Length: 417
Image (cartoon, rainbow, N blue to C red; front, side, top):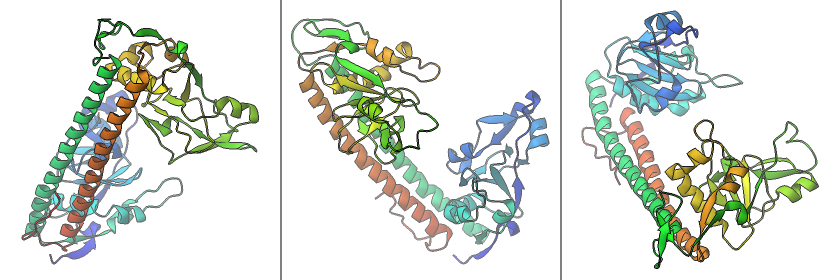
């Protein structure tokens, strides 16, 4: 490709966006109103938006651009790009590129998406980075002849569609493994493999369980305690210690990559110290009820009030409760017993009052579940690695095509490898 690199301002007019006042007659009309959130989920083409404006709202507090204009997020963050398929308004977190001459907008969307780091490097600001309209106008872009723009865009449309299809297939595989996992958890918690008399359990979604199994409240088998309350002075003092919070806990997994610290005096350390074998359960947030066993490998550590710590009173493994919470959340039981219909929230009292089935062979069942989940995790890890490789090759292909390093008339991408 023989292409001249020229400033954006010579190909496009840069248009700023805005937000109208909260007056009711400005909102809920038929004019789509884009934000960086909309651009992030658009995958290069923006057809609709989460919120809309009336024409009055758009004209009084925003801007409207026509179809085949390009929107770029220019703050929080810089670099999301999409072309619009219909007249659209947008907020101050975006800027629009309106063509001054005939172009193939698809080509420039691909090119700008390959320039994210360059766009971000031109951002300014101490509180948050913003790419000004003037700075955006000076960004150089390659501008091949229109017919070549179309040829490159057609090629990339076809090749990226292949990648998207593979990513979708892998996502379906993940869902299948998750369904298999939940099915196995349900069967194990219900003792489907055990012979002998059975009777209906108190949980319609679980069905019958062995007649020999007990049913009892969590408090009879486990001690449940909420973590330390956060306070404004938590990051100062002579006794700063690492602690776990709900962001560190996911199903079956403790994430040590981002560990905060706060002050724990000697009495608090005795109360909130974590020991190997403790179960940590998220008290609230989007991950409410997610839980994982603390292995102790991290060393000295504590926990705060977004987590419950569960310790056994008997020989019933804490993992049994972890798998029960996993299934209970999936079937919606916590929506009724907790407060998940409003703000996701699961109190210590709600956990303690929860009734669970108690088999004689819980340790063996926990071991079997752990092996299955470990095998599933290995498969998911392989799928994630394949996704990353496909995405990297996809981006490399786009960059090579829009910069002329790849002759699209003869290319075979190999993206699917």
